Length: 273
Image (cartoon, rainbow, N blue to C red; front, side):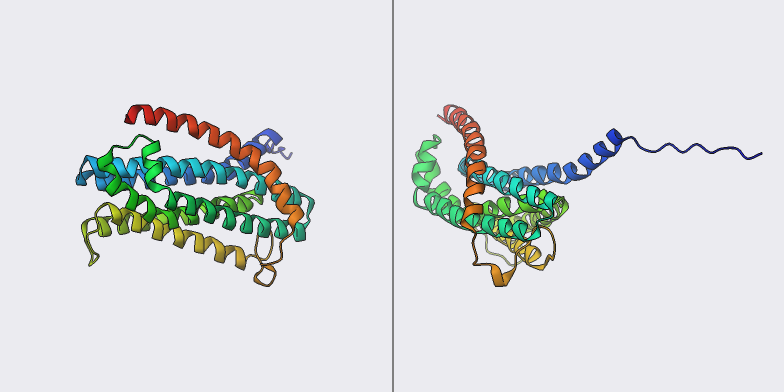
């Protein structure tokens, strides 16, 4: 007499939970890596004194304010890409990624230009003392190219996540952060044949690694054949209606995130003064 073997299959709830965790943990890890990059810069310049530490710390405030803006735009891209991906509309999915690409390029360049031009005013706004400005302003301006790169990456990474690829942005950030640790150590203190640039060296390292990370993301999007991708021959073809739809969703999300950051900056200004 044969004995029946009972096989327990996962319930729909268990399957859903596993899928959520599979998609979510790389995103959480990516956010932690971004935070750790800032902590590494602060830790490495800590030996240079209080002014150097203040310059690096205060630079994070305008950075995170802008991050709120671009994460909001990323929400707009994410929403449309996910919709077209679910509907199997590959052509519109690629066109949305392309529209997000150009929106991120234009807005990040404008934002970066404003940060560069108004760097001294930004430091005064967050309550920096006068002796921090000679160190902080050049450092912030050195960070601008990297800011432009990371802002652009935030929007384009959202398109990858919308199609279920949360690991690629995480891996890019992991490699960039590891490289940043090595380069920052080299350029701050003058190791491995690099010049000792002090605080400015942290800016050189961070901007360089962020630009390399953005370049890696761009190459990956060009190489993909399905899902969120870019086609070089269509790169300058922009669907303005999709651009407008991204903005309608993104501006609301950006406003929410930026207001939250303004509260944090106001609190930090009170502490700084």
